[in-house]
Amino acid sequence: YQWSRAVQIRTNLDLVLDWLQGAGLGDIATEFFRKLSMAVNLLCVPRTSLLKASWSSLRTEHPTLTPAQLHHLLSHYQLGPGRGPPSAWDPAPAEREAVDTGDIFESFSSHPPLILPLGSSRLRLSGPVTDDALHRELRRLRHLLWDLEQQELPANYRHGPPVATPP
Image (cartoon, rainbow, N blue to C red; front, top):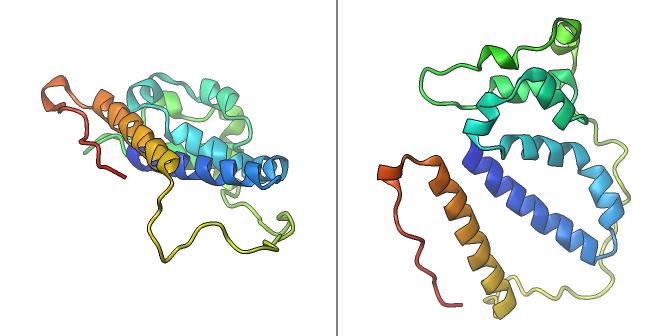
């Protein structure tokens, strides 16, 4: 797993959750996506901060993840070439069996009811997006992501901010 991809997923998940909130489905969506959101939040923690964390602190900060799920995410997190997970990420002895035998997959058999729109869609997929507010928000997100990415780079690899494109 990579931090930059997790930030992209978090941004997209937030857009979906915002849309669902606007459609009056916020409570259902928040509950349904709780575990996915928690997993993505974990992967969005900057690498330097994540490396300082212990198993017990990560379990406390991400309680909806099972020990097996947390261990899977941590053991597959890409720390760099030749770097494995730190020993601080090793599960507590009391949770070792749950890590070894626990299932990392989630069942979606009890999902919320499918609700189809009654009217026509407000977004024309075949035409250009002309909403200035959407373009401003996308530019703001681009700058935010760029700033977060630059914080992870050594100082001699950092560049100026991305060039804004007109709507």
